[in-house]
Image (tube, rainbow, N blue to C red):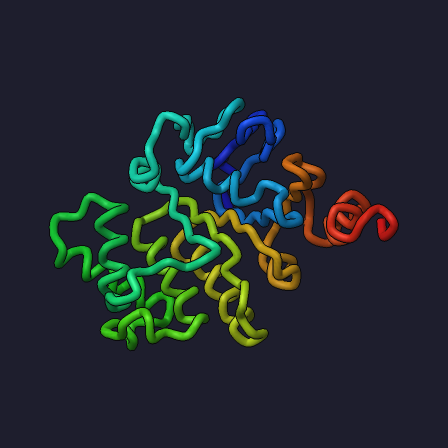
Length: 245
């Protein structure tokens, strides 16, 4: 599998007034990887995803995607470059059907010739995530596990080369988590999409990610293989307190 660099951050710093959400974070994601991003609440994980997807701009530092400086682009332009994103709290168009939701995402992310073409792509995407039989169902009636899959489908419909997943396992039962893990591997292996994921469900992160980066109080405190991260003293201290490290 290729090791071409897809995403890179150098000295990424973000201030909200006098409060630093991120402090000089360096990171990279290579093509074909599934990379995890973990850390306690408030450690800067969502802020980093907001910077990558263009919702915010770094105070200092630089984030590049396939050589493009992302600070130069608006969110829809970053989507056109090939960055798709899910959100921790799903916010679909609740009164629309699953097909209409994914069609709207296809039109947002890609320069398609028509709504009909977008609908064809939306159906293919719903089939891939296992929701095509629910294409005409209003989203408000879907259970949480299906809404999570719909959130992934909406991101996939934009045609990403890099997929940012924000806590897609949260609220799922063990069987649903296993199904979501399988889906993430299929996204990488069958669609050739690189994955960068925030996760709090440690079982899922350890089983899915090849490499894990850990943030603590806005700084990168560890990075490595899942089995090494699980016993890293700095990581244990960040989650459980110094006495447990």
